[in-house]
Image 1 (cartoon, rainbow, N blue to C red):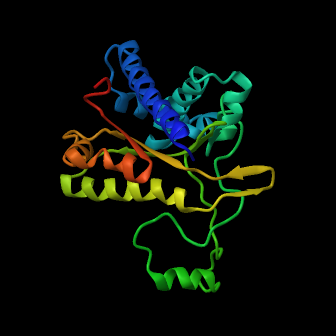
Image 2 (image 1 turned 135 degrees about the vertical axis):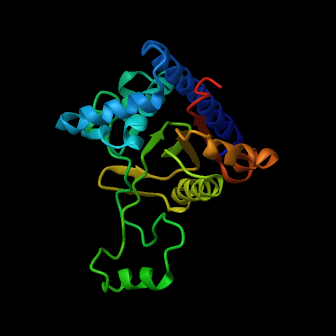
Image 3 (image 1 turned 90 degrees about the horizontal axis):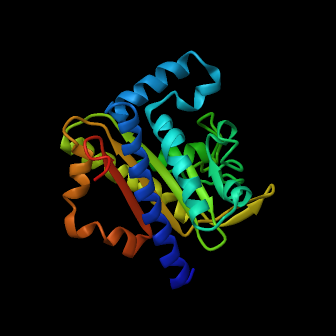
Length: 246
């Protein structure tokens, strides 16, 4: 990782954020002002009756697969990649439903001994390693989305926050940032024809709560917000339901 690649990665993420905000605003305008959260509810209702739309069944999946993944693909094209290279560069958990824009899965090809969840008891982890818990001793890191551009590799964690008081939102924000940064600590590896290794992370969250408590939790950090990129290579995109163009 050099300073030039780091600056290029930041420009990519800034451009992606602007593109995503525009896309959400245009979606509301095209729907006669219908809120993104309401559109997501309608997508989920359709998905329950159509197996081909299974990648839109949860609020988070609908947000990521309908808006975030296409915005990433378009930003890769804007960054100079042709259609085939942009598709190959975009990896997605729901890649089988996004075949026109995604080239494969975002999962690490080899499992890892630790999980992304915070606060897992050490005894529970040891029991899994020892085969006492009934699960696999190692689990496969599987981010929502990732891009492997020739100059920078970025992993994406997506969240859709529906409701909750400020204290709850603060905890959810910490957990989401922890999960995003977890992937950066998982070692590089090449296996099964796939590459894993990321220097940058991006948390993409949509706050659909009535009081915008997740967005408030983020904005309350004030001067600390810039440090997530400066100290941890994490870019945070947090969009409130009432400020999709803000």
